[in-house]
Length: 160
View 1: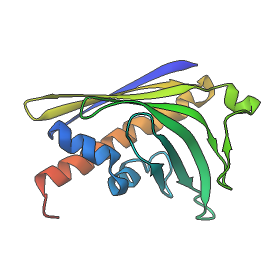
View 2 (view 1 turned 45 degrees about the vertical axis):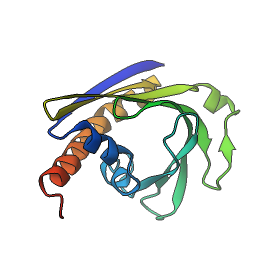
View 3 (view 1 turned 90 degrees about the vertical axis):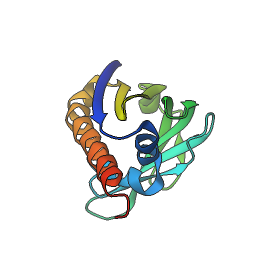
View 4 (view 1 turned 60 degrees about the vertical axis):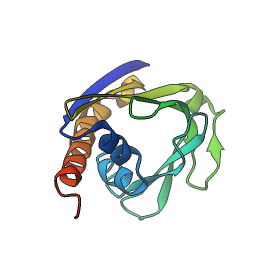
């Protein structure tokens, strides 16, 4: 397991960036680089709560399962830590015990937010299995660019 690291500067206040990142509708937009057919989350972002990240299969349009996680830490507008603890199977069952899952759990995905003069820097640090690192090194910059554009568009055109 290794750590991968990414950051983006967003021309918007931290509260707007935070709300865009974890909002039900906006989440499914900025995360499209990870799952082009769409993704969503079930659960909430409060510390200690369970949350599932669910993707849609491009070919079938059906939910294909995803990640079973827990919010390890939540300091609003400052830091959020997601602890990935298993897989959500397409049938809705959770796998936290298979050998495949035990190879990479627990894995953390941490977001740090720092605002200065109305500009917010979002930093992502994620535990990653070496086999998936190249894929995520390609997807994360696209996702962060989407988060930036979505947040800045709303910030500049709040009525739209």
